[in-house]
Image (cartoon, rainbow, N blue to C red; front, side, top):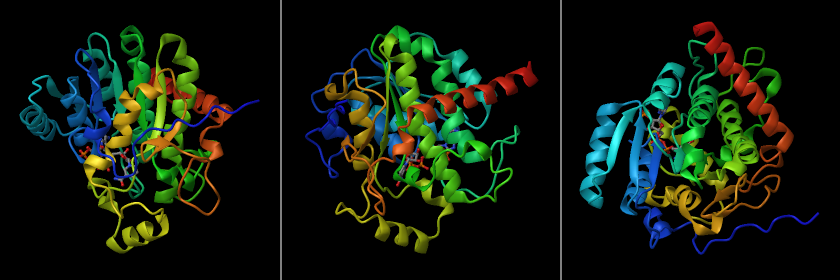
Length: 320
Ligand SMILES: NC(=O)c1ccc[n+]([C@@H]2O[C@H](COP(=O)([O-])OP(=O)(O)OC[C@H]3O[C@@H](n4cnc5c(N)ncnc54)[C@H](OP(=O)(O)O)[C@@H]3O)[C@@H](O)[C@H]2O)c1
């Protein structure tokens, strides 16, 4: 069997979101960016709005979302930028967002996330990072499937992380009920789930013209590191190495998301993992780059889909 060649784009670790989308016209395209009121979400939304798209910032802090929307309108001149409430750790909030969405959806950027938080649980008893980073986005994307399908050739962007190398999805104990809670394992598991989602969603939805890819944005100083000490951060950066800048700017951090959302090089391409604006090589043990084989495993991807659907259905049954 011949492996598909890796997608190579003419961009690098230094490229910005604006450079990646330069020359691409998104007029008439409708976009959702989750977590669009902070960090790389802002610059992802700004670049897509700058290319002419209608952009909805799906945010849990609506006042911050409205401030960001008005800033993006001012800097891009595109008036079609708005904010809408969405709390990914609250299934009722996700359901309300989906119910309020009307018409086609061309690009869904599943960007929001929480990293290495202390042990916290949703009312369902779900571990917070898995609930937010994976289950909330799984519910959102599957709930918006029809809107994506009617768009014709929609893309879903699943913002993962090199931290997926820290853990596969541990199906035997996803919510840390038997094993001791470890914040980085929980984050890594949720970020592996983001890649597996891209694999299975592409398999299920390619016939609707929908493709889903995952990515590592790079290391960017944002609100994401709120639970991490300075010393721990320095150690992480030293370990990461890789020859790129120590930290990317938010504009550089948004570049790979915007590439995956818009590049013609990815037309019809799904189920893959990108970093630094190019498709990633397989991870080499002992390094923090590339993609783990377990994150692209089709059997694990199918299993995760089934398990996720069952978790959501159990909640819906209780609520109903
Ligand atoms: N920064 C990095 O170095 C890095 C590296 C690898 C991967 N990533 C990934 O990149 C993505 C964006 O991160 P970032 O660096 O831009 O961090 P950020 O500035 O903290 O942005 C994350 C966003 O997610 C939102 N969020 C958290 N929990 C939520 C919930 N329950 N419902 C809705 N929104 C929620 C946050 O909202 P609040 O502002 O209300 O908290 C925030 O807007 C994440 O998926 C992260 O895992 C980042």
